[in-house]
Length: 386
Image 1 (cartoon, helix red, strand yellow):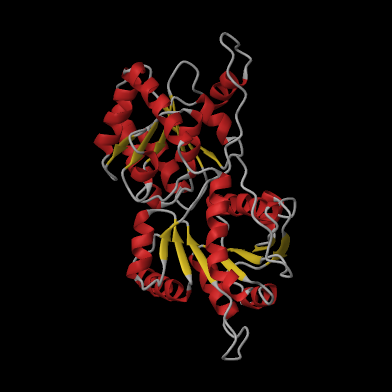
Image 2 (image 1 turned 180 degrees about the vertical axis):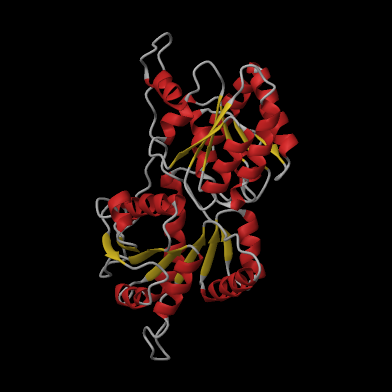
């Protein structure tokens, strides 16, 4: 059922919001695209400020937004561009830590007269940085500044909400969040060796052997070293499962050297735009990360009914419930054991598929998310519009 927002009080113009995206991760960008379409459908004026290339990928203008290209955070002109875009906004909603920092700087100085209210700033923390040493100390300072500058800070997992409160947020809440439902891949056809399911497995080299899929940037916090350790145990299985990792990043060289030197059954296939097709062909999805909030891979795997084996970190347990196999982070033996049990017991896999689809059916819809976000906007902006 679609919720239709009530029109603004008589004589008032539509609410005008500015959505600010920082680096443009897949999860936050997809969320803003979905949110934009829903807000526009409810009569809200939306301006999206983001790096120019993101409009080509997510097509915010087609969703009804005005798009303003804003340089990435390393460009000093980004705050200047944001200040101009936010000049007439009723509310600014920043997605990510650095987007929140730049938005707070852009809003400083707006409406400087002491009796005029400041433009409310809502910030959503979709994830957290994995910094170490001096960078981690800088990160904590930035988090504290953004938390205290926000009228409302939304965290996509409970531990992010706790982190925001610990950093001095006046009002920290669990974010209503739904990703767009993944597009369904073409269904496999029994006995059709030319079908899309078979073609995908053939392309990856997984005909006649189990296919395990991991998706995500090739960075240290993704836990791929542990995943490679775990594959040593699978080399004793017959047939030997193939692990496919889709993504790019700074760890690619080191991972590929390990794969080559140790003869591991792993393929790095780079960035892919056909993840639904890869998932449809996979026997299981693997998420070995040090920390995740609302993982896009977990979201898509459960929607698709693909068994998921993930680390019990961050927001993953509250996202998946008992619909996935959860293992400790960094425990290669536990990860290897979970995969081996899954491959040895088809009934266990069928139970996980059914539980995954049921869990996904209970998640907030895009419509639910837009309605809840709009209630936050009304709470902050409407008192000044009456």
